[in-house]
Image 1 (tube, rainbow, N blue to C red):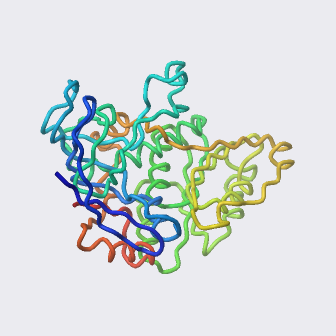
Image 2: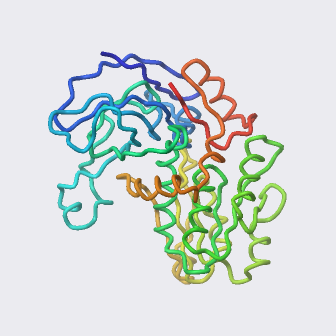
Length: 343
């Protein structure tokens, strides 16, 4: 048995490869992919990655087709969301209560999420029902945002600014509100770009207290006018250079949580004033949701309607038209909040 899978690199250089599906190991399952969200990391690969082809996609919702001989928690026909990196549960860190430090993770065994099938360890799957596959595929990015908000440890009623109105940024804003933030602002650009406008509009629909358009107003002036001493937390989901803006608006003793990446050479490097951070007691916290955690909690938020998945998963594509949609995403010509690949 074979599966068609999507690989890519700079600039939207795509390959559809046929991969052999091996005989399952006793603890593995075969999942038919019904929906796979397109992540910002995927876009970074097809815009900037100059080395070998990368498998695309890891935000998976699908259906169990076959189970290994010792799998007892899953059965054929189960609807599942799939973790791309799953804690092993056996290493010293996992057994010491720190699975976030696991370096012996189960992975996707070389199968991109943007494909017909994936083979994964059974532990990577969380069963769901009552949701469309497309909506369920929001679980992974929501879990990433959920992790960032937990890392932020927002004071009850505290002030939060999210830099970057992509799907992760918007999910961080929504989760911050659920977590008890008293003021949530989202910062993004708007250059007549349909994609940017759609995302800033959604920020307002999600109930953000401020939507700051950085191409039209000063982030620093706008935030400090409302909070003269700066805000309690800044969550950086936009590229690393946005850290400069974070330092401009964080209060004395505040915390900056950062998870925005760039694969463009040099764009991952910023100047860092260590003295400023020390003298102002600013805490920097990276947030990297690997291994994947909080899938059940994220899935529950979607099922209960606390996170409106239908407002995020706005467009779909397939093998036939993915190049066209990827190009539109990179150019910002469509009002896309989040694109979902449906093989």
